[in-house]
Image (tube, rainbow, N blue to C red; front, side):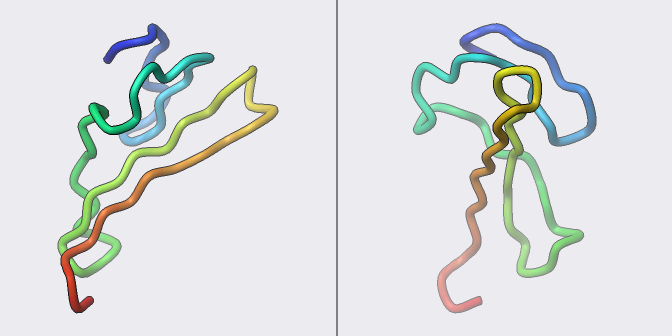
Length: 59
């Protein structure tokens, strides 16, 4: 993934920089229901965290 860092769990990316969130590949999150996709970011040594989720229309 661009910007450096590493996965610290199946869906959590530890990084200090995400250059373009629109280019981040979201991972399967079907266990959350509605056949969605998501990714979690841990930033600045876990001082800040963020996530991106995408679900189909109408769910």
